[in-house]
Length: 435
Image (tube, rainbow, N blue to C red):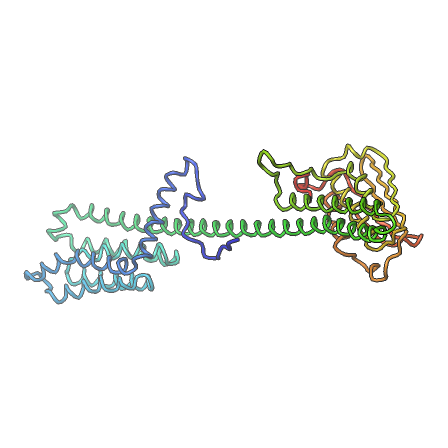
């Protein structure tokens, strides 16, 4: 399984938003995201574009100074450099660069130089402040830029170049509106950038949660397969060992009975192979010549189970009460597996003359399972907690709000008692029941 790193790939906003009501927002966010990607891919172009454009706007003012307009080319060139060169550091020090640009704007008004470059430089810095600086710095910058622009226009009001464009009042109004619009556009870009970053973080979290759920499902499936293999192989091997010991003793004195025992061993092995095939594939075989897998065992299969145990030596009796066949398939499987594991435990620790009594009582709100034998257990078997078999029985019982207890009884044997409820826990229907 592939693991998602903490750094996600750039996420298109459209992946997490949808619907016709979001189309305009999606187009705007996609456009802004494309601009941000282009800016990250070409940082030098972004860094130098603004100063070069401002310098191009200042060329007419320089030409006027070359032609003899006051205050001369050196002053005009110095003012234009003051507008353009600081823009190279606008990302690292936005408020400081704005202060420098504003200072040279006032110097421009005082010296009588009109380059038009400072208007664009101020707009660029206001946009940068709106995007990256604290809101207080933006408010201060707007409060400084608006009156400073008004003063500059009033200073150059008699200039024929402004009169040719429009009236000074109209130019002032346009520039003030541009300042406010630029600040608003920068704030909108800031919000959009934060929104896109939130969407990207959400995508990363969703991918991490998906991978965590997949790993949890994988671990659960491994535990289910391990438990089922223990139930199937543990029981079958215990039966096979018991039958093989009996067949070895009967080989010379009762060859026919020994042969019958070997056939039971073969049948048990084939049944275990079929169960393992079903467990591994999890689906039915396909093809016209394939035999479908047998269904999951239930209460109706307990007779065959007890016959295999009897063939291995122990004397097994079964007592039932209530409607066991009407139980849900998942509950019947749990009953079967608990009885199977208890009998397997008996085969592993009991002699051939052991007597086992199995009792199943179905009530309207519970199923009671009791498996008692007369076999003594070794001391290490009495330790608290039990082995994997007892753990598997308890896990199956928990699915049906039940309990399992196991330990020595008053007669010196061993008993396993379980209580299961017909109604499983939430989200644990037959589909969630272990095989």
